Amino acid sequence: MALAIVDMRPEAEDLINQAARLLFDAFRNRTEEWQDIESARHEVVASLAPDRITRVLTDKSGTALGWISGIPAYGGRVWEVHPLVVSGSHRRRGIGRALVEDLERLAARRGALTLWAGSDDENSETTLSGTDLYPDIPGSIRNIRNLGRHPYEFYLRLGFRIAGVLPDANGRGKPDIFLAKRVG
Image (cartoon, rainbow, N blue to C red; front, side):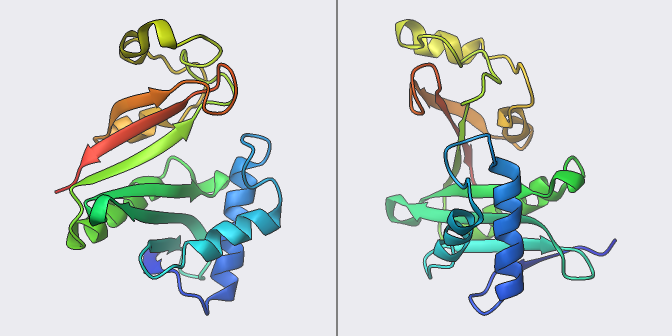
């Protein structure tokens, strides 16, 4: 299967719709965001802002298998991965890795020093969920375990480190896990 990573362009309506479908399918019933195709499409269109990087990985027929977007912060020295999504039938085949590495390369060209991602645990997929983290946040991070298929381990395999956690970000006992990686 010949794969290509290309820029998402505003005139690429078909790719925009495919990316929105990927986002909707991946996050439906998993998070409060993107619970309808319109909100997912809005996210894709928003990612086309000139200051952002938005890339899609397609197969030889032009079907989107994965999509990533990066948002600059701190004067472009830090870039947020937001969002990253891979087709359910194509996960664990290196597509997410390829998209993150591509974003890292492009962000570095724009002066990035750090890439970061937030990864919510709204569904009790880690030991950080369902507990009061405030008494010992560093200890909780140090002892984190994956109870389901939470993506934080994917980011760790790519060289990210857990840089922090925001307890109760998505409701009591539902934290956001922050991961960061030095670029270059």
